Length: 159
Image 1 (cartoon, helix red, strand yellow):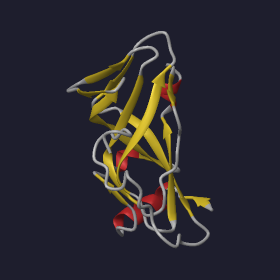
Image 2 (tube, rainbow, N blue to C red):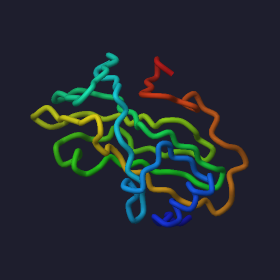
Image 3 (spheres, rainbow, N blue to C red):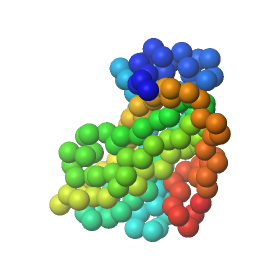
């Protein structure tokens, strides 16, 4: 397995092997793609819609979604990473997870604020980076779980 470079990511998006919609070249990093936050979140079990800023209070659990829709082929997996600017404030990913080959939809990132202060996330802020990796062989079948084709934040009960 090898991590895709920025030029490989851009080429795969251009040829429609990977879908990232909307795609912005400004969000392309040397070996990852930065995603932005969806304007709805599930915070402590409640659906919250925000227009400018979402504030996550200390010790609150939230499900944050990416604005970008992602579709992966059978020979690529993704690894989402919460941006370190949020981690340095005390926002920790409950599970960094993996985006399975064949997945399509928005991503949901479970996070908890372990800091002493509320953490603000702006509507246009970059939330997480996705690192893409080639599989040594294509998967025999793609992801077909309960979160396939997700749109917005999804929790266990909201799927």
